[in-house]
Image 1 (cartoon, rainbow, N blue to C red):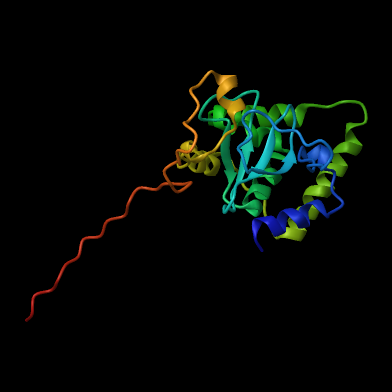
Image 2: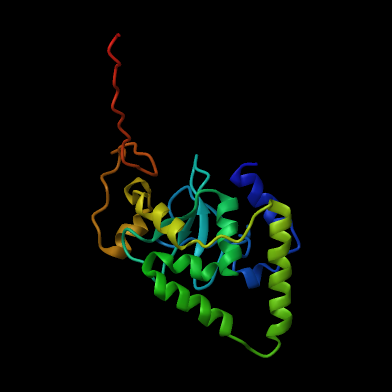
Length: 207
């Protein structure tokens, strides 16, 4: 199934979206931040304004981080498709650590996960049961396994070219940047660029 079909299936399940920190977008008065790309399709909301989007013609899931990021890191991939994103979510147990990988090294990322596991509050046992039941249902529905996201997400983000993103005027006004001239088209680029592979060809001499 495609990412968009999987997203539709995901939000049709009886999940604890709040504990997963991936709550559905609503049609009523939708929120858009200055760094939300134009034409982005918001698929879910995390905490503190963090949201997850799809871009036109792309299967990857992107994290938009308006509070902790800066120019060049406001929008970054966190999964090559929705199922990979869910396998990362399964490992982290919620989206918050996944959204912060861009600014963490491996040690700080592990510490963040440990701190999250140690965080408790009155009545948290029932919340944890609900979260774990949701994760189990995701594994069963999408046939996924928990996958450590750190190295994979770092690779995706290193290979991503943020210059392909299109932003509204509010983006440039907020950051004090010069706006691209109207009518000028961005040069078409792939969303991900990988180094070229070269082959050496050899011809055997006739006996």
